[in-house]
Length: 254
Image 1 (cartoon, rainbow, N blue to C red):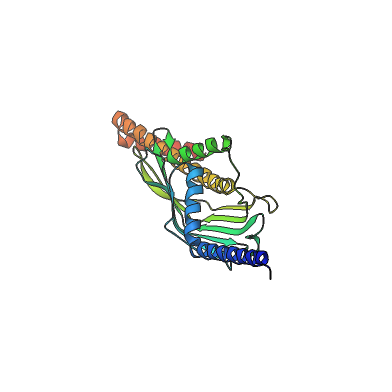
Image 2: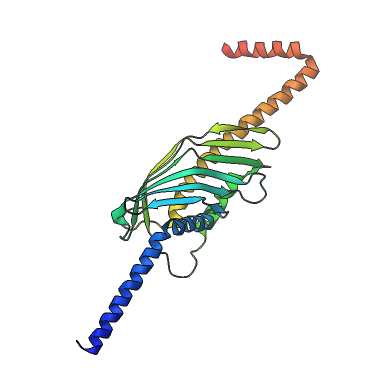
């Protein structure tokens, strides 16, 4: 065996050993890498701090859980977080991990807690959504695009609740309608992680914002009616006001 061949084989063995060591290190730190990735992408998309308590991922069966996912409120609001998710279940198609597009068969968020806070004419959810939409319209930064492409088959955001509150009118916890989406990104070209996260979060925030606005309107109507009743009580007396309300009810029934 010539010296050149020996050197070549030595380099090849060394390269294989280095690659093996890198792969072992990556696999050993996979959960931490995914955790950091989620926090970085999430923060970039929503424009506020996104934090994850822990990630557990099994590469062999493609099953993963994300624990303690929190999305912070924009500055200026009293409450700390807009979203708190104790557990997010993720199922990835294992065979797609080495392909051009990683196919996520399901993302399930069950029992999330949302805080919708009104401040003047603005809400924290509207501010988050406006920031996301403004960010998505900006030109992409210069540099190489990410090689990670994703396609999501099923997204479910279920059994969630929203604590809606305003300094003037108080607040209450209300149930949120379930959100289900399918086929976000195709399996041929996929979406960037930012595009996928934006699609999911935009749908959730829009639904939560609508539910909160409906509740705020109901609170405002109740407060206005109380003021009207108070004025009528002072003007014509409680007994006459109650008679007037009964008369209105009779007329309405007819």
